[in-house]
Length: 336
Image (cartoon, rainbow, N blue to C red; front, side):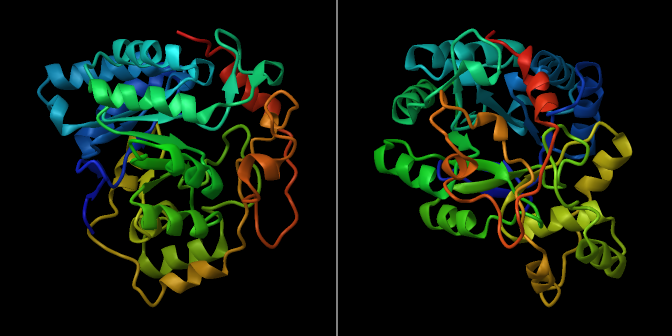
């Protein structure tokens, strides 16, 4: 299994990256340093994660210590939802680059088809309708300027990807979405593969314990556990290896050095092809539904509107009461 995938820009995105969502600022520095020393070459960041300055300090230290050079790493950041207006996008990436202490990012994503009023907190009352064509035009300019070596999107459904492709001068290189054995994104994966867009999986372990996520456990799924026992691997390793064999990069999050190293140990073995069909027996449920976005001001009157019908399959919608916690995680991440 290759340790990277080729993007439509010709650049390579590492097969596994370290996610920094929900890692406290005081912990993210050591997590990144340990991850890069363990072999990780992709660090996924965003201003919304409230730790991007600490990510930058870790990168600076890695370069100063000679652990890696800038060109050895693939760094992702994301457009803050309050800066979707074309006139605000360049300011947004410049702020991100200042935090990261970099001259460019390897990938810059529209964090989602979600917009809030400029300079406000991420609460439902501040939601606005998106204008993706206008925002994407601004993203293309950042690509032209070289501030982002590749541009893409996150949390885009099949319909939203198709709508974007219809107007894009520079096609998105990546669509970063929730994807794991419990939400396999078969339809979206097929579309992305057919259009040259790389599918990258956040929460490939199901993001256990994170606010806003609810539903069946990825790591506790009987099929995943059974396969882990057969292969003498951890459930996390099986879940991540499944993603690689499906052709997508994976971005697990951990601040624990032991788990960081375990999660990276997915290249010297594989899930036998005759066992891969067992994943087809797992009931499919989206774990991050983002119900907080359903609001008259957002233009999304239901979850079906937001995800264009791609909410779940087979079972009834799981209830979750943690969205207020999810919003609190974002509420202090205001425009920088």
